[in-house]
Amino acid sequence: MPINALQRFIKLEAAAGILLFLAAAASMIVANSSLAGFMSGVLDARAAVIIGALSIDKSVLLWINDGLMAVFFLLVGLELKREVLEGQLSDRSQLALPVVGALGGFMVPALIFTLFNLGDATALKGWAIPSATDIAFALGVLSLFGSRIPLSVKVFLASLAIIDDLAAIVVIALFYTSDLSLVALGVAAVGIVGLVALNVFNVTRTAAYILIGVVIWIAVLKSGIHATLAGVIVALAIPLTSKSSSQTAGVRAERKDSPLRSLEHALHPWVGYGILPLFAFANAGVSLEGITWEMLMNPLTLGIAVGLFLGKQVGVFIPIWLGVKARLLSMPDKSTMLMLYGTALVTGIGFTMSFFIGSLAYENLDQSFANSMKLGVLGGSMLSLIFGILVLWISTRKVTAQATDARKY
Image (cartoon, rainbow, N blue to C red; front, side):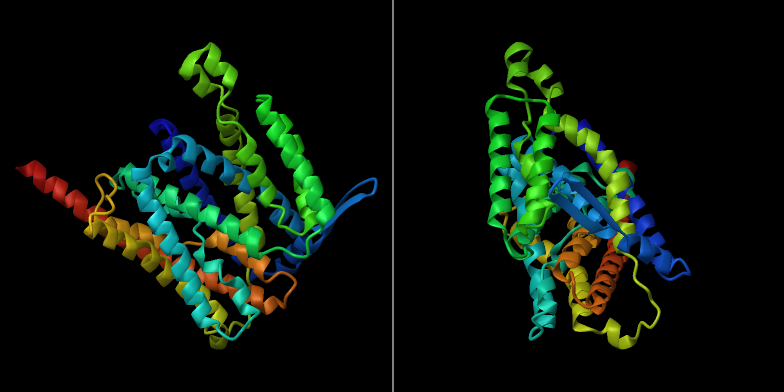
């Protein structure tokens, strides 16, 4: 990705992270005020779309989680495809560091959660909750330090979080599906064939892809597989470049005439400033009334909190540290090991993705599971946020001091 485009991406994600924090704080305030009942009533209200024999009847909360979050995953898919084809993930030398960090950061938190909840089959459904990283929140933290955090470190974090999102998509597809409907899956398969045909005939109008995407979303929703995966399927089909533009106007025009980049650019503010804050407001609220020490020490709560705070930093940083020491991995340009450790801490801010996986894991179960999940995510994310900021502040002070000393001589 060109540097200017990359900087715009990081800037937008950082601003969205700040808005996410405000939305989560507002959700907690409302959940612990006299407006809690009203908020619950709004989220539980039913909304239906009926077209002939087709009926989709869901609560407002599920329209947000199943519908709007499909748009979020559409954006994630677009970002992932672009990064693989022309961005940081297309360069194997640049890819190794975030891949190693992402793999460790996914497996260690899941292992910690599993150890805390051994013997509780219901709680273990949430094993993937602490493995997620909230890219907007994490980049929002790094943005607080401005240019004192090198662009290379922000690129590393963005790449790691995108790989993390890919892992989350695979987990959702494999582990968080209900009974499958072969008829609905057949309709989805026909829709995918339609997307392939659009590619073969070099159709570059995104409206055609979105129209088929809506059909796929409905089919996937009815199939038992989580509907948000439809967003990823559509994203992978949208072409990065137009063949006609490359034949007639050269590479420079081709870059401007990109269906994928155009759609990504159009969706980014809607997702960052609208969908994700709305999702956070709808899902982050948990009443603190009646919270006891036993609830905070619940294995489910502790498994998520410790997984996010300790598991993420260990899983991301230790493999990277070992790889660098063994000269198998290269440090990001102008970075320090302490700065990478602070970045590893920041990856423990699970938030949006952790809430999302948690909502799937404990759907239709007793509310106590959802409350424990939310407490764990909030606790682990807040600890990661606080200590991440502290370590990054120390690391940037050291870099600034060294630069000042160098100028003296």
